Image (cartoon, rainbow, N blue to C red):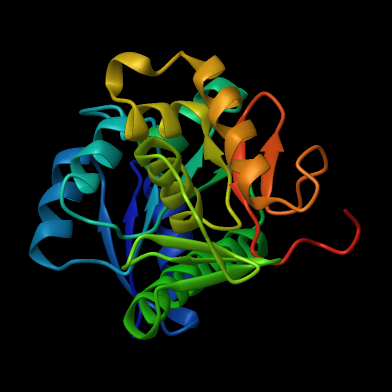
Length: 234
Ligand code: CA
């Protein structure tokens, strides 16, 4: 059974969520504030977290950071905040997805299923293989080797780290800030020019046509996405 932790301070919304989740065979826990959420998550680790950002005792972002200290549980933010800055902040802190209130229950349940599916897929991928093939290049995440058309490609440690982070988040947006913080460190969070330079280098080494990348995709103004199998429309 999938265990969902609902972190929300509006009793009516909690009730509606719990009824709908239980009807679909989810096990649920509910926390009305951030401190309770962190305590419940530690006591009975959930499979997915639905998180309101406006909580009475702390900002939901702090809950994300608290969970991310020890857990990779998928976190779906459910919030009335709607500016893209706020969404980016939540995603940067480690949320997996974002849905704006008011929302339809069907959409929320679909996003929830997708979040759970992604972690299941990631878990099984890390169990049986660490080799990712995209186009004409192959990345062995354990051996830290990249081959293109059967030949070794030399990557610098920075290029490698960047590629590794993108592959780990495959098919999802990784924000500029996430990449800069993870690869270069917290004080580099605004140095987006580094990303442009290193992404160009990676594309030159890996993409068949570096000016029309099919796997190392730019999401303008937001970040980058690794697509193992590019959509045919592109
Ligand atoms: Ca609230």
